[in-house]
Length: 139
Image (tube, rainbow, N blue to C red; front, top):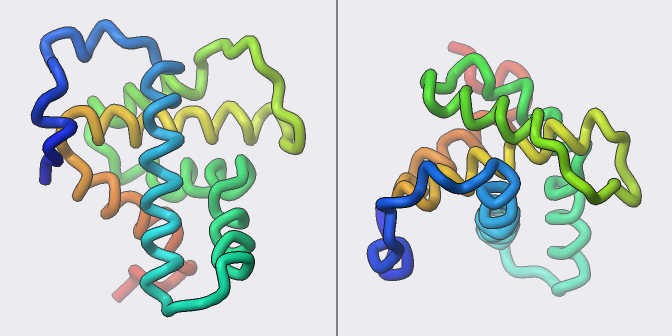
């Protein structure tokens, strides 16, 4: 599923972007997915929606998603995830452990990569797999 924005985006240089640039885009994509999923649970006051989404967007939660999805990724997706995790950022996290922050950056890089490749449905699939309660996906 591509958007008008991604359709208009010049993908010819997509592989030239650093993992941190992918994470920059992926941060926004991840936030939008989270807000949409929270809103899908029903209408609520904005402060309650914000509290719910803040719990998922924080680095610790994204790091947990990292470990839940890493085994279901394609080779290319896993490569982007690792490059994002290993990227050396010049910013330090305010309210997060540095290890969680690095794993979160990997998740954001992956979501940016998928979005820019027009694969938002795959990003949503991975988000759902990464936020599913243990046992929920087991048959």
